[in-house]
Length: 165
Image (cartoon, rainbow, N blue to C red; front, side, top):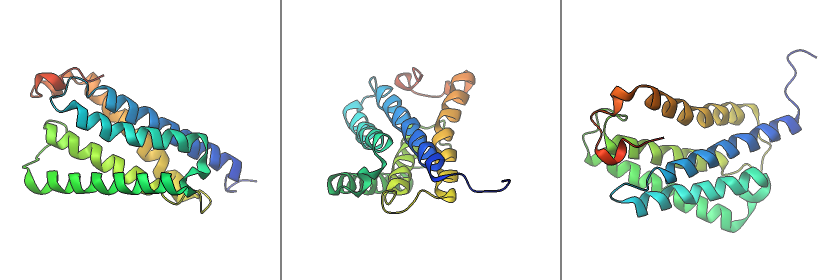
């Protein structure tokens, strides 16, 4: 039947795939922090959502567990506070050229993804959530590819940032 909504099994599989992609992205983001001057902080900032989202990709009902919900809410809130601080205290003109802009982007992606995942155990993963999930889970990889291909964009970056994947 044309125009019919995808089956719940298909939607659940796509939701799990998006979470697997985001777990991979957060893991890669943590990895590239290794040579950063404040690597310890940023590795933790990315490893926490990587673990939470990896667990979600395995068991979508985990978002109903109190420990998962608490860690996710606290980490997402912390990322929003950090993003607000960067946004209000800095002169970020270009998020790709300035380290604070890239940090801000990472914090917003984490907080946004944690918010998107928040109630996925309580309600069926619907079309709008899937559309956002697919868009958001593809976006960081497209930006990473763009940065990798356009080497000129990295010329103004500090040395520790030039080794991005």
